[in-house]
Length: 294
Image 1 (cartoon, rainbow, N blue to C red):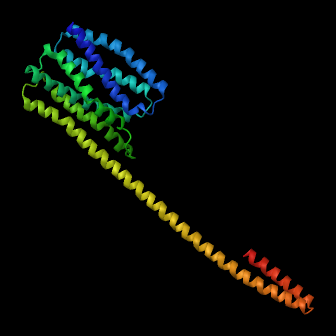
Image 2 (image 1 turned 135 degrees about the horizontal axis):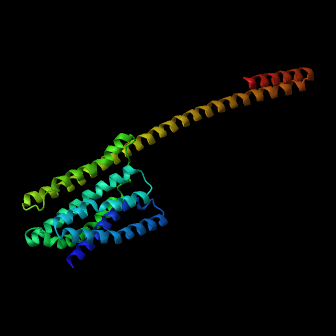
């Protein structure tokens, strides 16, 4: 019965991890793609339950089975997500690393909870450890949902090399933490447990500061571009204003010349000098055509 409970709880935790990795991509996925993804994940979950049960039956309810299930059990879920969610691979790697560090922190919390209740995490208390893991996951889920939903919203580096390094950073940190405890069966000393627990929150804090700095840089660049555009618009408005003033001045001169020409023509016609008036009109016409060609 304990083996079945271990396999079932392990499968729930693996599905929970897949859900956390799904959150950053959720808003960009069509509804039908989301349904198809979760059909695949649940189908593998049923098969994964049998695989977990087979592992614990073969190895027994021990830390070796625990490590086999949780060190490698996430791989099929990740492959399904990568195939179903059509996003750049560096985004999947980055989300995987962040979720792995998150899961490592929850596992550490669960181990400390079991140690507080029973004095130590031993093989016969692994099911209780998994129950504590699920309880802590549920307790911290509102924070996780907010953080992972916004995980890919911030500005990203334009340089491809820098983008890849940023994507691999959480995964490499998680791998380093994992290798440091891979050969350790239990952590009997509280100093070791607290040291192990301190690493993930420190990383999340550092990452949040870096992300906020990136957002601030992006905001400042956006503001600088907006100011530059406004300055260009102001210069264009000044140029148009000067052009309008120059045009208004030319129109004023033209109106003055027209009034003078009308008076002269009227005076010539009143004096009976029609031919002179016609010559003046022709001259004005030629002058107007010449000025229009300039």
